[in-house]
Image 1 (spheres, rainbow over the protein chains, first blue to last red):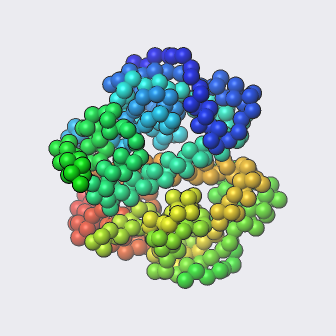
Image 2 (tube, chains in turn blue, brown):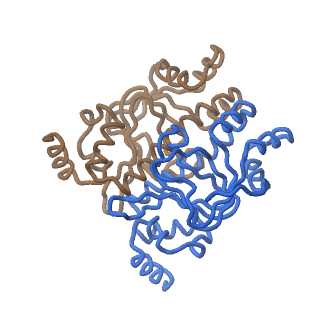
Image 3 (cartoon, each protein chain N blue to C red):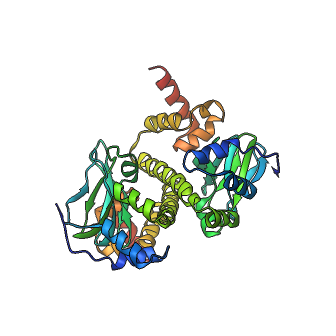
Length: 199
Length: 199
């Protein structure tokens, strides 16, 4: 269930300010296009087969993007934590049905930007082309590394990379989700952690 | 070996025109930032450990981005064919050593854009922010699909997706490269193709 909530734009404006400078009018216009929402732990932001209608900026909490294979096994594509944008980008861009689910692993506060509002933003404040180009660059690099690592890293190396990429997340979410992100069983993850902490 | 060659900008200007409109002065400025190069079959555009100093637009030919694991096994991350941009994007953006190799599977003609020239382009013709945002969106979606598919698709499904994504490429390059892209052995690929063509 998604609940509309009070709007806290400090974090998102800080994030934007890392990449582009907005004057006050531009900030106000940007804020006017954002919709705050909260999503409770275990609820879904997106169901596979539905269309991803928003880019969601995570103000607080944790989301998981995942698929389920024919054997009912979860495969975690990514986690999203504070300061990340999340969506099924393919679905958002093409408005075709999403190929993945997104659910909340903690109660989560979001600021959402719809596709029509994003198009308005590009039109009225073209420097957001630059902001989203930079966001996309970072996302692309992260995905390229993930492909590379899934092909050539050992499970231990993938685990260490997870810890580096999502600092503190290991203590916040269930181990089974981390195992599903690494492509290993929870039992093997547990062995791996014991082995690495024993070093 | 990279050889500097005559410049044919028709394909790249067509590609740009699919996304943004340039006037004649902007086209001329863009062209002035591009450097033509040819790279012979089996030669490298980029070595792992070197810095990826250009984004390269493929005018003709085929390149392969790959890594080699500790057992000497190749893993193909992507192929690049006519109309694609190719680089180690992580290395290009960060100017850190590349984590992959890029070599030519055919004699290949490129138009290269250096990082300083790309920054000049963004500064002088900001609508290129939009062009590269769109290119990055497509690349991001393709990578997201590749991660998803490597986790949840069967080898047969991955093969069919390869054929869809790179039309005609199967007839142009050695089967071992396709196997290394799919993450299977050449023998298994051969069995798979027999099975699928028998349907």
